[in-house]
Every structure is written in structure tokens, then in C-alpha cells.
Length: 505
Image 1: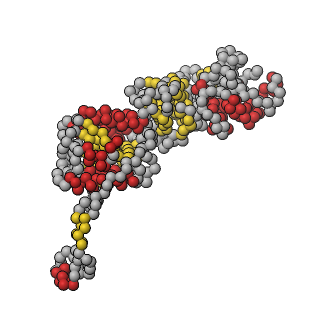
Image 2: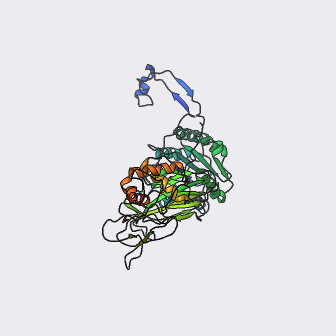
Image 3: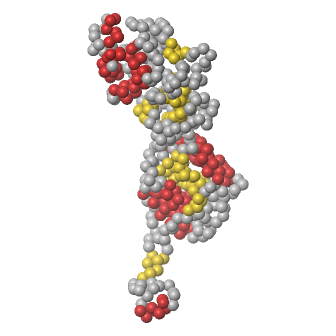
């Protein structure tokens, strides 16, 4: 249900009369007329100047904003054709940004007064429902009320703010007083701008004076349409301006790991670490993170495993809902981003159950080059590893599940390493060793030295087992992410893994 709100109108454009009550007129006032006898002032007649529009603040190019959609639902909007078209256009706009990006929306409708249809939310269903709730109303087109209620939504907020204001008619009070209504709206728009909130306006139809919309926003923030059919494209341009050339990550915790069911997704997926296009980020309270990229890439998104959770799957799509990139364990690589692309990636995890049987690690032998890290195998041969299940089980459906290996290949400087695996390694070293490495996917001297430091820190687990096989001593690091090094990284990332010491050498 919407809530009504009527703002206090600015009176700067009105004539202000201040009357005096002299002793001679005291009796007149005591008869119950306008002024009390104690009011002693000199009669004056003043006209205050109209408030001038102030600068419209620039909005940081970021998807992590709060946006208020302010919809004109006055009687000039045709409810049979225009209102449904406006609703559909705004819902398409929202769908471009939710749930893919960290943006939050609120929805306000206005006619002779403003109604709050929905407070800030990142739930796409709630926003679209609020847009559908906005009903056509009779009376004036009171821009001031819509802007005043929009300002109230940002109280106490810390995220960048945006108001998207759409109207098909000039402001008025009861079909008249356009200049007064405009001046009130300018005052309320200025109040938003003083808070650093940018206003974008949509002129719908050809009966509205675009200069009025410019007065509450700015010349570079007025979008005009000759008819409602063009509104979706106008909103698409705004979405591109906000989030074009970005990669947006959403973290989802699914209790059973079955992505076909959605009623078991709960918890607060905040604080999960990712490397997005080489930058370290953590998810916010809505489970989202975003980064703007320059150039097509290819780019990668790598998730840093978190104790108590197991990776289920990951995928990325562009704004056309087309799949992009190549998914692997805890990552999506080879993401191409064009200028206007809004890339949305979803990473699913499930909580780890600590009891009962379940998934194990089979440390069978393998001679493949660059094999799995859990038990050996590599360019110099040795044991490989693969995930297995007990008889009759189907992987991914057991009741007691453990997280999987984080590092899946052996790596060293000078090898043709998998760049995504190197990025995962670099992210791990930054978190666990404060290595401050660029997450580049290139195994260079800095990464080599960070691996050596890790090996020395955990020399008993990583270096000492090699002493009987020719290593000088347990204080001689190699910088080689091989059997014992990769095993210990995976155990630190997922202590519930059952990874025995691999066969050496």
C-alpha cells in the first residue's frame, strides 16, 4: 500500500504582507480579527526573489547507487495506453540493473500529491510490483511533492544518489499557477542537489516545456521523447551511462546447492572476497560487488573460498542475457566487455555440513602435466586427484558436503601457467600473506617471492617433507607451487578437505 505525503511548499515567489496593529486599531483586533494587539511592527510590503537553480552534481560512474524513480501519474497520462507503456519502460530499465548490479531503487508516484510506492530495495520483484501499483490520479501535476518525498528517502544514506523524474506535463496547482509550482519545484530540486543527489529528467510527449525540466535538473540531464514508445530506449541509455563497461558480481547462498529451487536462499552474503578484473573486492550487504573496466579484456572473476561454504557454480551474462566467459571452479575467465556492456556474474555457494560421510578426495596416480594440486601430479609426474563419491551417490547431492580444492594446478615461474589459477594464487597470497601482489595472472618474480615466504612460514608442512628427497633443509624455499605447497593452500582454504600427504617425490 502506498503512503501519501504532502510537502511544505516554498513561498519565495509570493508577495509577503506584514501588517502592523497600532493602539488605535487594538479594539479592532480584539474583536477577533487577523492580528493580536501586541503585534507592533511597521507596515511593509516585500517581494522576495525566486530561487535560482543550482548546479546538478555529477554522479560517480558507479552501479552502487540509490535511485528513486519518480513517476507522473496525473490525469494527463492516458491510463489505457500511456501509463502501461511508462510502467513497462521503467520495469525494463529496472530489469537491466537488477539483480545484476548493486543498485537499489525506490518508487514514487505523484499527481496532486506524492505517494511512496516502495522504499529502497534491491529486490527486483518488489520494485516492479511498486511500479505496477502506481495508479493514475486526478488533479494537478505537483512536481514539488514528488521531489520533496524523494529527498526524504535519502535521509541518513551514504551511497551516491540519483533521482529519475518522469513527467508529461508542466507543473501546476489545480491546473493553474504554473510559475509558482515551478519555483517550488526548483527549491525542492535544489535541496536534493545540495545533498549531492543528481536529478535526471524525462520529458514525455510534446506538450511539456523542456526548459522546466532543465530548471530542476540541468541541460545535460534532460531526456526528451516525442512519444511514450521511445521511453524504453531513453531509459536504456541511462542504464548504459550508469553501468556500461562494468562487471557486476552477485553472491547467492543456496542451502541445498540445487539451483532449481529458490526458496532456500537465505543469509547475508556480505564480505565474500573476489578478484574482479585484477582488483580485490568484497560483497556488500546485498551480496554484490562491481568494477568498471577499460578495454575489452579478456577479464576474469575469481572467488576466494571462504571456510564454511562450498562453491556450486558460476556464470556470467551480458545485458542481452547472452552467456559470456568460461566458467571453472570458483572463477569465470575470458570475459569480453564492450563499451556499453553490463556484465552480470552470479556465484552460488552452499553451506558446508560438518557431519556424516560424503565427498572425499581420491589421490590416485596421474602422470598428466599441470595436474590437480590436491595430491600431486604435475609437469614432473606424480599422483593426481579427482573428486569421488561413495557407491550410489551422485556428486552434488550428498547430505554431508565439503568444500572443494581452491588451487587445481601446479604452477611455477617460467611455465605456461593457467592465468586464472595464478590469479587465485595471487589473491590467496594477498589475503593470507599480505603480499600486496597485482592480481595479473602472470607468475613473475613478485609472485615467486611471495610463494617462498609462504613456504617458509609453513615449512614443517611444505618444505620438511622434501628433505629426505634431496632438499637442502626445511629453510630452503623453492617458489614452486607443487605437491605439498598446493596441498597446504587448499587445506588452509578448506580445512574440511581430506587431503593426505601426497606420495613424494
